[in-house]
Image (tube, rainbow, N blue to C red):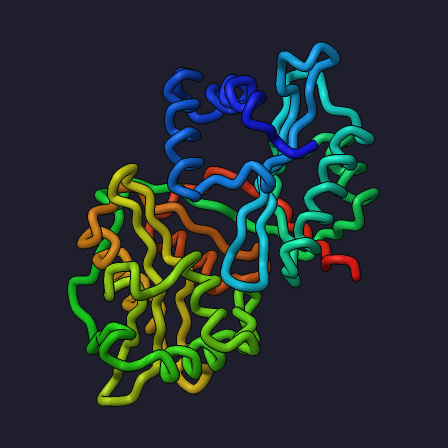
Length: 299
């Protein structure tokens, strides 16, 4: 069932331990997010105890751009959550995706969070594994930022959106972490999870070598909690294999620091050997492996 306003306190009690905070503080944040429109109760699906006093499990849907949604992993009280009950929430989430007119629904589940019931529920609800990922979390202070660089960097505000889309398309070819640019400008919004106009211009940058645009970076940071990531890093095919990736990544790390972040959270497909080597060279600390599941909205 969709989360109701009356069940919001019980929902806060469920997720508070996951956020390492007091339920009352979590409830206060949720209330503020409801009032600002950041949280939509119709996108949260919960299972209640027989007496209706506890939320025993939940799933939350997050829109990304105009055409895609991400389903946050199922969270349940220890020992609860049958394959049937989890599948019911997954079917409800899929129905909501159809209602919103979205094209794709994805979810990532850490190996440590995956149970036999959860896996069975995903299969029952029509999801399939499309990739495995390696995730990293590293203090930015421990990472190497750029010391020297052959690049000249410009923001998308300076280069224009069309060039960024062209580079994004070329850099995505033959990449396990490529972006579908057939969506046009929405592909950029999907990577940013919002509108570029609302963000620091340094969020999207183009790297030039001798006046030739060859690299593109999407850097996201939320200084209020220190989190950051490089949502996309790419080099056009003609310039791959020249050892440029390290320079591009280190510029990204310098940008995240300048944006006020303190923690770097990133990941890549297990099949992206080039990025795995780069993360290792940068001293990134692996913290999880996960499966990525996908379900196309049903007609």
